[in-house]
Amino acid sequence: MLAAEHAEAFGTDLMAMAVRAREIAEGGDAYPPGVRELASRLSADLQVRAKALLTIQQRVGPGS
Image (cartoon, rainbow, N blue to C red):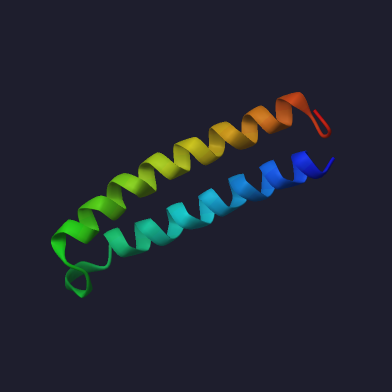
């Protein structure tokens, strides 16, 4: 059960980081262009990976 909770928390954390990365990517001149570009790519990647992780965890169910 603890492993399932950790996996779900990890997925939730990845989603939160995707949101933060998107905020930076959309932050305009407050962030250097290289930082915005990297944050943009990370945002998209983290969101996809978080959704995949959470989907897998839901399919296998708690305690698996």
